[in-house]
Image (cartoon, rainbow, N blue to C red; front, top):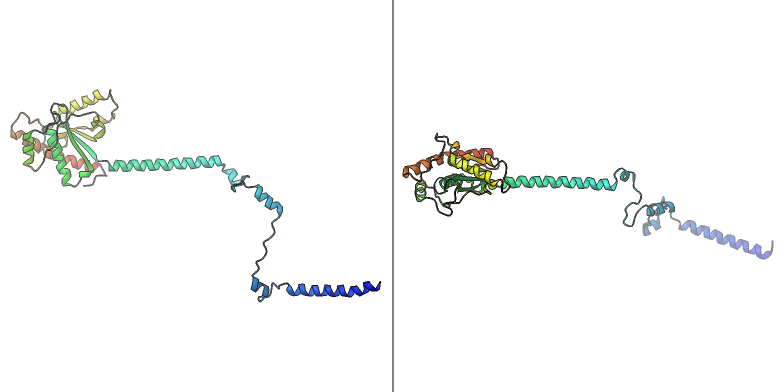
Length: 279
């Protein structure tokens, strides 16, 4: 061995020894709680290496917005089109339920409509309207009812009620304030109950319905809304409310007696048959 090489070997060995010693001293001891490097720097454990293949698969498997390009087994069982159809069906079902609920609320909020009808709408039917309105008001049910009157003819249209009927009603604390109008096709839509004062009025109302139904759509159930006023009487046996127009004061008093009886029973019947009206 040449002398220069022999002299260099101890020097290299010494350098190696020093390097080994430095490396050993600098490496922290993971089992030592008071390790100075961990205490000062709090070096976190290195993240595990992710194979390049897995990374590539992850990136290749998703679109630009993170949506998987390759369907998972769950997605394969529930294709997007089927999921959309199911969601649409559910939405339609919720809309139908909401519509039904709205309809129920609307029906509940709608006042019960009653129309009283006689020949000219100046004696009996305006008195019936006033008597029934008075009873409804006494029970605090004004907001629950729509009350009106009409005649089968329009001869007195726009006129106040007969002054004799206004006077007789006022003596009983009842104000007759309506003005005469003829019955019209929309009444068969707008009113839940139509009360005829006598049988001739009853027949005229039904004849008007038959005549009008060929000109415009009217509910098929409309004839069932028409009733005779005296059919609600309990204390009197008369089947009709007589027209007092050509008689004396006693005729108007008789009409009011019959209307008092019929209207009281009528109101009881309506309240009993309609849960949204509470007495």
